[in-house]
Image 1 (cartoon, helix red, strand yellow):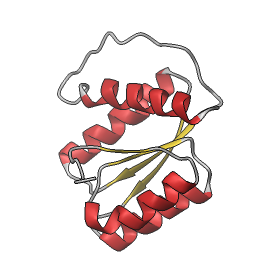
Image 2 (image 1 turned 30 degrees about the vertical axis):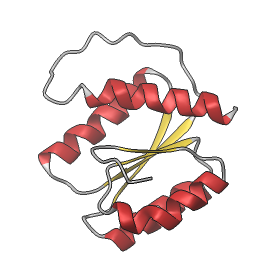
Image 3 (image 1 turned 180 degrees about the horizontal axis):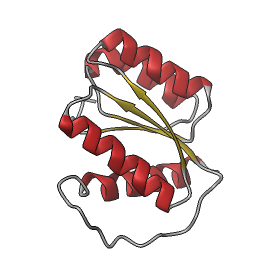
Image 4 (image 1 turned 90 degrees about the vertical axis):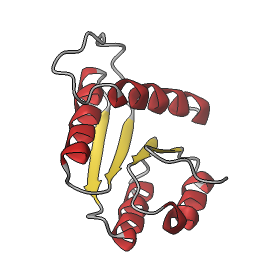
Length: 128
């Protein structure tokens, strides 16, 4: 699948899931099944927010037929980097990251970009 299509699919999934926390019901359609896509989701911790975000990502991915591989960084930048490297090694189509440290991710973002894997950071916007 072309990088542009992967980016669009990941952005749509993230946009849909980010609105789901705090809502028991959603009327988001099932969309088109995309069994050929695998997204990575690297979560930063296990707080109520983080748990809700992960459940939303997994739920929306399931509704859309997208496989999701998850990892938890437990508020540790080194663990986060290792989790992202694992996602890259597994050749996911895109990675969604609820980051612990944008500074620690710079090298891994460059590695993912070189591999053609788009990364979507939630809750933050790095300078570049």
